[in-house]
Image (cartoon, rainbow, N blue to C red):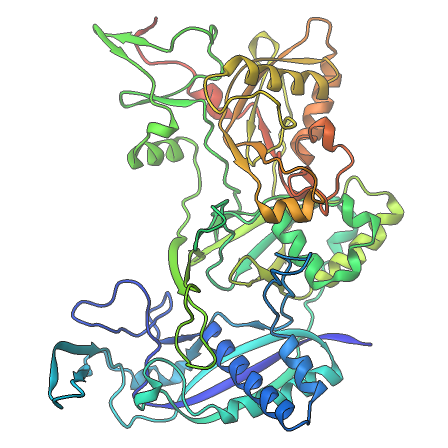
Length: 602
């Protein structure tokens, strides 16, 4: 079966009034405001279009089954919308992923913006007392109206993409067109005459592939730029009963490789796919080629002065400084204010990003009542990309030459089309290949006293689950775990002098079911980005061996703890092939801010 990438373009022509209800705070003086995109243009959510189409197709399916005329073609199309997890089965928490990927917004065509008038008077609704026929006190609703009443031919356009055979694409076009032409209205208040659909049209075409670059055959490290088409949500760990999902501001390597595996399932069984290394994608201004670095946890403020304490000669001392008869204690990142972070980012010469947080509220709809379903409300705190892109890197250096040929051929096919299904909003990323690798790995040289300062850029699982590690107050046990890791992974060449680190516990039912094969449940300890480890060369160490080790770790990430040496991306999400354990060695900020201007250590 010849599978192709198809784009279905759906045009909806509406007559005013209509309303796509904005969630969260409304415009001043209004009870219901129009949803707008980042440019202030009126839009409908793609999830709303998706929900209306699925609701209509499910209605068709019930009618046909009741008439003993089941349609397998219709059943297939409904399956392309995906299904939620089956909580009663062994595969709980494993949803049937959708083939369809809907645009985040359905937008008004640019040539019709002239019809929009922000000075159009609002519309009003009142509540009527059924027993008296009079207005109910306080039941006055003010509704934003951007178009004068009677304005028609307002066309909203969006896309649906999917990987289908030619026959499947034709079948989808038929049933999507039927559902669109059945819809009478869309948006809020459609039961009172809002959002009348005057015309609906669905067309489809294969998506043309991007031309591959000839530079691919000559390098092992590929710098990749990801341009995200919508607000995305890579949810941070949260309580299982929480209905609020807060996004990370980066895209993990395992999210990227998972989206690739979902879009191209035939890759899962190929050995080379387990060996490629994909770094986390960090935000960068669209005109910048500098990938952001994480602030080291060894940075501290003494009053208004920034100081790095990683290379302190006597780390066991209390970090007090006396200056002009005043004593200053360090303020580390957990105690910083916004101005401290701004000052530290400026000192690090970090590129200034423009992305913003974007709140999305969702609920399911009861098919029988067309009202919100009970206990189905949830919110997503997303990242709105705005003018930023996300930079990552694919490393093929661990592949054999024969494997590399297959990998490059597959990657050319993968990156020729947008990558769909990233995060909870199913964001789509457009790829572009950078002229050189994104990650600059400068030559490593030992610092004074034969030391090396390692700064974590991404989370890392540096030790197995300890039996007796307390959540707080057991610094000796924690230091021993870290010291054992560095000693073992360096074959005794390096020892831990001191460190500045934070840890977080992760786990949950999904992790237990899909990665631990239902072993005895045990959450993991992950060392957090920004953690700093000062390593001392052992007395009889070999400098060339140390530099070779550090170069490997800098390019590929830290190796896993010993109990996970043989794990792949399918059995452990925290391996270095997924971008975890990325480090920087001997960053300039550790040297440039090592000395306090005035005063003495106590």
